[in-house]
Image (cartoon, rainbow, N blue to C red; front, side, top):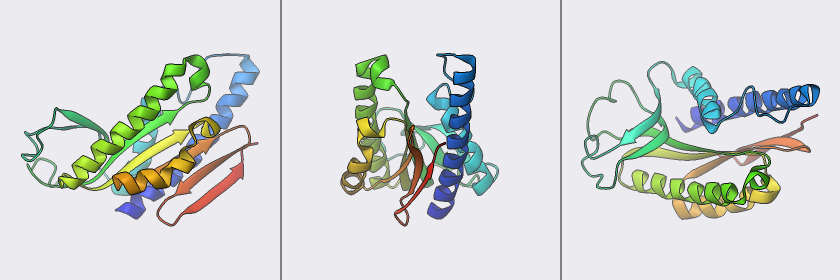
Length: 202
């Protein structure tokens, strides 16, 4: 399951990096300051990643914005929560108190986020740690078997997530998958075997 998830992540990252290069070309050609057309909101990236997950895991396995409540899991006592991606066998999805195979949260640190508004950047960094804490809790309760924090980072020099990953993984026992995009190059970190794949963006 873990290898399949990372394979889908690597495929998505390649797709994302290609489309982002195309977006930059279109932006220059049209002299536009608008965002798109492939990725305008974080939900767009989650949707496209889910397409690759569906290819890998099969029909009925991939769920988005999945609710976590005591109705589904009797040992969960917190407020109603949601996870961005829920990988679950359709045979057990309707059964209460059955551990889901994979939960994942997704964050997009888009280029120019701090210039747009400084609080956007501080908020998203805080929300990453909140999501890591949530995933840790759900994993410890046995609600999910594996947990991933998936981050697309277009401001790696600002975020320094590459330097935070190891600490986060140790603290929260959640695997962090990172895909970066800058003017210099693109990279996708496969955390299963610590292999860093890098190629020039231009």
